[in-house]
Amino acid sequence: DAGVIQSPRHEVTEMGQEVTLRCKPISGHNSLFWYRQTMMRGLELLIYFNNNVPIDDSGMPEDRFSAKMPNASFSTLKIQPSEPRDSAVYFCASSSQGFEQFFGPGTRLTVL
Amino acid sequence: QQQVKQSPQSLIVQKGGISIINCAYENTAFDYFPWYQQFPGKGPALLIAIRPDVSEKKEGRFTISFNKSAKQFSLHIMDSQPGDSATYFCAGSNNAGNMLTFGGGTRLMVKP
View 1 (cartoon, rainbow over the protein chains, first blue to last red):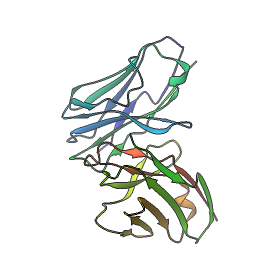
View 2: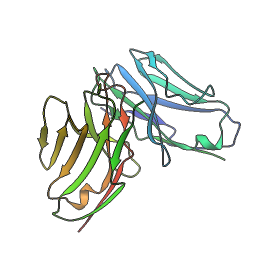
View 3: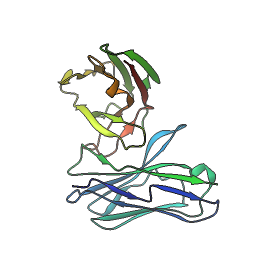
């Protein structure tokens, strides 16, 4: 198995632009998680899906952030409009029946 | 989300020594406590985990000690090796491992 796949690996954009991060979970996993990692705030859970349904989005920082999971093999995290304080590494993770979460390699986002 | 406090922030250990990282949690509903290991440029990966019905779990050189009454748990790395140099995160969860709350991380350096 290729593991969790994220794209792009690096994204540099200007303030005000729309950013879309993509994730392909491990085949057969029914839970998907989006995290944000920064030096100041550490590793934070933004949202998680179970069987493609958003279960908890209490970690989403504000309305500029949205996430979708249209099917079991694909999810997106969108930021519109982006701001410099959104600069971080965004991780997607997936799990089967809870417990061990398998993380992707992350997307390093820089907003200028 | 309830906090998980992790210490120290950084740790330098000689090869062959014992590395000890400590965590304290607030949410008494937590019932799953994993440790994740993260190498630079990679996503976190599960190292070892414990449920509160046991006081200790050992896997190879890695041991978790758990003190339910004190709401504390720790990771011990015996015979530390340079390859163990990474950032370690503790976490707690009360939702079958789904809603992970991470500690701030400990950057471990093992000197040869």
